[in-house]
Image (tube, rainbow, N blue to C red; front, side, top):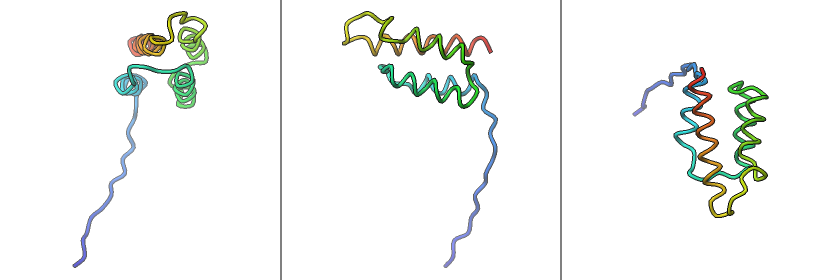
Length: 92
């Protein structure tokens, strides 16, 4: 007995807003500076943010700026990063 079927490939247009909201919704409650760098690299590769936006996001979430106890640093970084990304979604 043979089974039949097919695969459908469909191109989906992803908007900047949809892409960033997906990232925000699936982001952990804590994030390291290295993980921010990875996100920013991906955002730049996909053309979702500008170089200037990436630099601002990196600086605002860097360890040099987040002078708080290490126990809360990654949580604070995640909150700042998510809120800055939300602002980019609203600007679209």
